[in-house]
Image (cartoon, rainbow, N blue to C red; front, side):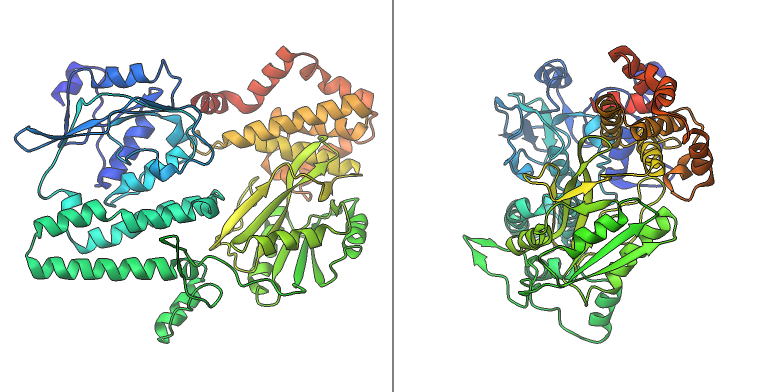
Length: 574
């Protein structure tokens, strides 16, 4: 408190309850005001010039992470060993780089761009040992440039009772909690298939340092150490063999196995995991699809003009073992909830589920066969996302989702973002720019569809009512590109439907249409549409053209749309 009173750069922040080291780090990151953050653990110390070396290493803000070496010191201050410290640059980080192995996981010997944590909502888990190892690899998946420097001004105190030297039930469990954090993140990001072997290696090799210290020190005696290693080994083997199967089960399924003394199924496809090239392969593969897989097509219908065309394109598919469920007469969120519930209820009846909106059509008769082939080739795949050729923007937009029968949802989203990714034991793959066209979107929209399209895109752009932490930077960029596409399409075709979409977007940006306009049934949306639907395209363009006539005008319009908080979020992510 005395130092905080003497130096305005020091702020004292106190938690009402103990959130552990992870919670303290998260609070520090959130409260920080600078572009970069650095950390010193409470029992370590740094030498003069530590921060200066890190900042110089950033090349005036070019690098996202700067990694320094460190000295391991005894409680008396004697240097026992120097660790790392090298001149190396990853600019950019190679696409095939394993994020777990870029550097040691320690938080404290590095300079971090703060926006990597804040914009990507990556935080340290609370009350967990080893939480650096659960966090640093996630950050490296978002960083682009890393620099290593020769500097050993951070002093890490080696204590006999430190986390890496100690044994307890919490030490046992927290190692798997950390792996779970990483695995959940990689699955959600669609990276698990690529990093599956790296995760397994992490489990197998990550204990070397810890177990070496445990065997050397034998705190609590020979018997306690022996029991600890026995439990550690049993848990390692059980986690490697069963985790990917168990995580795909519902709460009820897990309870059934436990309450009724049933064994865990041996592997996702009935087989046992095998050692391959000295690696354990996690049992995340589905059983092979049958020769003629059963497909359920789920369609959300709110009066879209292309509905009959969509059904005709479905009937023309060469793969004919499909059924269709049309969900109509519901609000947007309610309809999505019904769709996800239907998939979970009927997963025993079908092998694959395709979410095909009523304004989407198959581009070719072979498309469903080709989608099935993608799932055949990728036995770990549970969620495939394919872009559509979109008439409204003249670009490819994310549209059609195909799921295996292993997916689950715990929620159906909320508000303007109502497409949550499912929980899944396997992987997710997104084809944002497929080599061939699979689907077409809004090929002949009604005027109301076009109006709704503009309002929906603008709502995802402005994110009105969202806090700084809730703002989605990627959505701002994506939806602004969609509005630019609308403008360019109007300039190309002079189609009044594009002008109607731009007018609806302008009403949202100006505050005349609220969040409920994302729903086709919203009365404010219909009232606004009735106001403008009879006007010719040229008259509509007169209303909004000023926003698009020059680069300066477009930039000003964008800034007004995202608002001050949105601009701050974008600046932090830049």
